[in-house]
Length: 286
Length: 153
Image 1 (cartoon, rainbow over the protein chains, first blue to last red):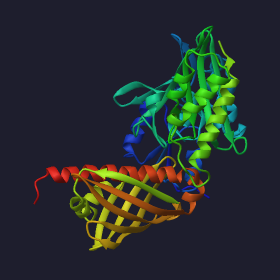
Image 2 (cartoon, rainbow over the protein chains, first blue to last red):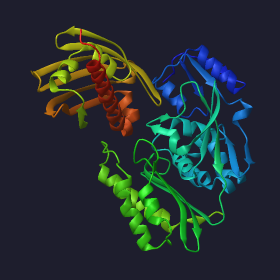
Image 3 (tube, one colour):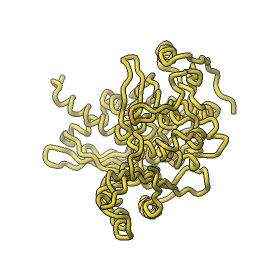
Image 4 (cartoon, rainbow over the protein chains, first blue to last red):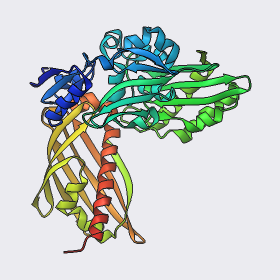
């Protein structure tokens, strides 16, 4: 398949990109790594008049530490999440999630910002961002704002980014002493869309877990924070009883969709099995 | 693919019924509706633009109302084509039940999606259809409430 004809510009700054978008009257698409946009063009599922390439914008790249937060430029490739030592140390759930994201060829081009802005309900990085309580830096013509991941994912493929705005960076709070994480998913084959996935982060103290943060994905229209399961684990040591209580709590946390491939009850069951696995294998990161 | 649901609307069954046949209300309620023409007492043709993630397509379609039991129930059947992106067709049985000053609207729909849309988006089509249905009824409810407060011509 060939894509419909479109114009192409390579923006040199975020302001450039946003003005090109405005001039195209919104009939434009931002191009990041291109691993969702390009196939959809080739399949003619969309036909924008203009593609605005963001890959040359300096403000969207780079990984740096500021005041206990790691700032990850939106154009950071998936492969960097896998290999970059700063991301491994300060945003370890991105590193843990990266091997599950598609395949190496896609990870070499696909970007973290692209994955978050696309917000596929089955993708890994959005759930990792929610579990780490990351904040998303969005540029608009009015200025720059930071949106907590919990408020960023609105619906299927829908985020707090308004038309024409640009996701610039992801900010992740650095791990504190005693922090543990876990990430896993169940897919039919490695690299396929997950049937269900889980990202977990907590602080392990002598008296039990604190600040438990659990995000599940592929169980609803966007990553779902499992608040009841979090509460069931807070203040407790991880043992069989605590895990069983967290698994039981998922019934109240999730309302998974029935779909033509498998029923909601199976998804809930898989979510419980997976959460049990992840909780039993939490790893210390700080 | 079956979709069903129930919606409580802030209007009497008679008001809901006339809104279901009201071009202006439907135009406001259908997500992404660019134009809606009434082609007969019981049929409409619509142009709808949908943008959901990687899909952005303009659908042209027809909707027909049949099996009409005034004030109680009817069947809406429709088909739409989004050109190369694919097509959708379906039928929904709608029933109205009064509940105090409100109306409970129940619907059961059978929807089929084909073409590339189906191939690419199968895993998300049901969730998307439910989201659009939800938006339709939310808009419909808003339009109904506005109608009520507006002076009747």
